[in-house]
Every structure is written in structure tokens, then in C-alpha cells.
Image (cartoon, rainbow, N blue to C red; front, side):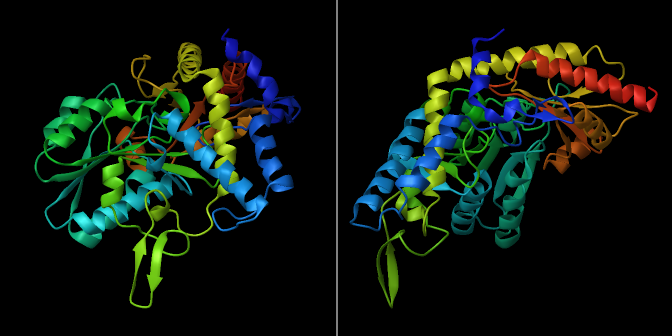
Length: 407
């Protein structure tokens, strides 16, 4: 077994039982569990270092500000970025909306194309549809191939001078598919298009170097990488961020305000209007420390090991269909599956009775469900605290469901 097994002691929730059964938490793609190191970091702020940041000349405010900006530096190092390029947002969704409105409303016009894929989370579809409606631009979608991957050649074939924005998931939350972002970014830049990556699944599970990745912008959330809810990150190339207009106005993001107009603070503060989620950002900083100590290469290897084991065990179940690549090449640890005789919601309910927590539904990816011709899937997803026993409990629970439904 992976050496990461020892980390389970850091996650208090894993000591729980569900319906008298050992807890097998397999919904980390939706939101991860939190280690004590993150809980303690946030508790320390609330108990002894809490005050609004950037606004006070007194000790508590200075301490909170120092901790907040230290978290920004930690995130920057984690993805090999300049700290000025790290903007704290509410979530991946808010970061993508920020890009859609700032880039879209200021740079798109009728006849322009926005390119994405059919496998995207709604957060990387709906904002672009809204902006297309405002500007007259058109959203175009790249299909998945028969192996449930995004063919790089198919993407690049659709990128022409009409494409102004390419926005693609770095790792599908349903299929686990990992497109060739660097190659797609090169094709986008060749026609002057902006390359955006929805990295909500990618950053928590794989090593990411934004300089090597080649994208212009990247968005991810703390709660999927051992951190708290309510804070996410928008990374952008500094020159791009300096060109962009803010989409929220208010305190902190200004340089000066008169009755005739306003000027903006330097990046990144230009995009952080109002009191930021500084306690949550400090929690994210602690999560980054935790993951950095484990090593993201080890995190990704652990995911691949469990994914391989899950695919092997799921293949033993009659009539079960895995939705996603059947091998580990360019694949993450989200494993979706369906059974013709058992609806995903019924399966998840029965699994819960067995202590196994999985996600069931459309996973905020309705266009993909229609493409796959399934109403919903069940999804098991792994993280640093997952072990083979969790997969075994999943398989045992599926067989309980088959017995109940007489299949």
C-alpha cells in the first residue's frame, strides 16, 4: 500500500461510523475532508489573531494581514507563480465568472467564438453562454472521443482566428479525463486567443507548474484540496491581469475614489473588493503546506494506484459500465459508473446504508450526461486519505444493491 496511508490519522472525520459501518468517504471530487492542521490554523486565527486585514495599524490587524499575505505566497509557490498573480476569490466558479465578465464584456463581439468541451462542469459552460448572449459571440464545443478523452487534434482543428477564448477543464470531474493543456494553449496562442483552465480537480490532485502549463489563467478551489469552503484562487499571467478591468467595485480594490470616478489598486488587490475571506485563505495556506509536505507527485501516484484498483474491482461487477477512460493514461481519480437496472440515486442510497459515501446525479455536467446517454452516474473519487479498503467496501455495497434489485 501507499505510504500515504499514515495520513488518515490527521482526519478526525474518518473515525466516524455511518449506519454502524466503517466510513468509506469516496466523494472527494465534490469536496475533500480536512486535516487537523487546517482546522487548527483557522481556529488559531479566530481565537487569537482575528481582525480585518489591510485596514488597521494595530497589532491584530497586522498579524492577520501578515498571515493572509503569507497564504498568498504559499499558493504562489505551490503552482510556481508570482505572488502578484494569485487572486483570492470565493471559488472556482466565481473565478471563472470573473474571467467571463471581465474578458467577455470587454473583448468579445458578434462573430467571435468561445471554445470549450462537452465534458465541462456547468461553471465552465453557463458563464460563457451568458456572455455570448450579451455580446453576440458563439460558444462552440469540442466532443469527446470513443475513449472518453478530448482529442487534441480535434481541439486544434476548431481553433481559428474567430476563437478568442479557449476554456477547458484540466481534469474532468466526471470522467477523470486530462486534456493536453499545453498543446491546446500553444494552438490558442497561435491565433491570439486566451487560454483558461478550470483546474478545480487538477490542482488538488496533480503537480501544476503554471509556467510550464502555458495557460493564461487558471482557477481552483480550496475545499477540494483539504482547505475550507468559501475561498478559491484565480491565477493569471501578470500582463493579462494588468490589462483586465475589475468586475467588482468597493473597498480595498481602489487607488483613489472621487465623486467623478475611481482608479484601481495594483494587482492582485484590484480584483479583491471588500473584506476578503482571509481566515479561509489562511486555511488554504495550511492545506498547501500539508500537500507540499506529502509531495504532489506522491499525491498523484496515490490517486492513480487507487484508480487502477477501483477499475480492476469494478470490472468484476456484471453489467456495470465505467464512464471514462478505461486506462490510467492522462486520467485522474474520479471514477463514474452506471448500471442499467439500478438508478444511480438508488445505488448511492444503498451504499450509504453500507457506510460508503459516493456522489450520484449529473455532477453539474448535464451536457456530458446527454452525450453519454445516461440520466445520471454514481461517482467514486479518491484523495490522500483514501485506501483500498474503501474500494472494497464500495464493491461489497454494489453487490448488496444488486441483490436487493435482483440483478
